[in-house]
Image: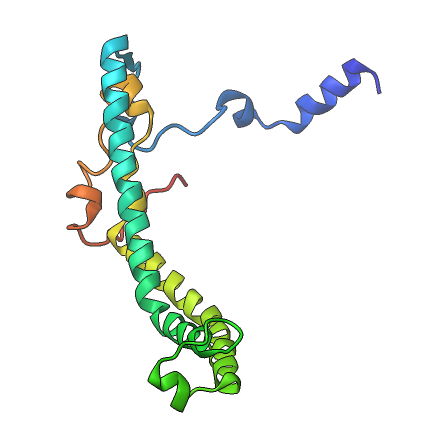
Length: 179
């Protein structure tokens, strides 16, 4: 096909609305704020540090929450594997009373194997607990966009949602969608 035939073919396949509207307009006109006014260089650096500090604090809260949940949920596995390794003669061979009287090499090996077998389902349980808690607290909505530092008038995400990260507000059942 020649270039002219190709252009005619592409033009016939496009609808009238595709040429007129390249993308959907924003749902809420308050979010649009056209045109955005850029900040000065000094103000931009200050806001950048504030946004980075806020995002770092939210990341730290998420990491601490993950560590706490995994430590609590995986505690049985940690204890079983610890006693298995502690009392096995080829690993640590402790002189503790329970290692001499209760646990021999076979039972220590069984504890090690049991600990690693129950680890997989407990990791899944820990991830489910973390994801449900993070979703309920809406922790991932606390991260602020970098545009907050570059332009004036960009609102904090949590400000209109009913508190910090929307923790205080009930789940909204309203769905906004273009039809």
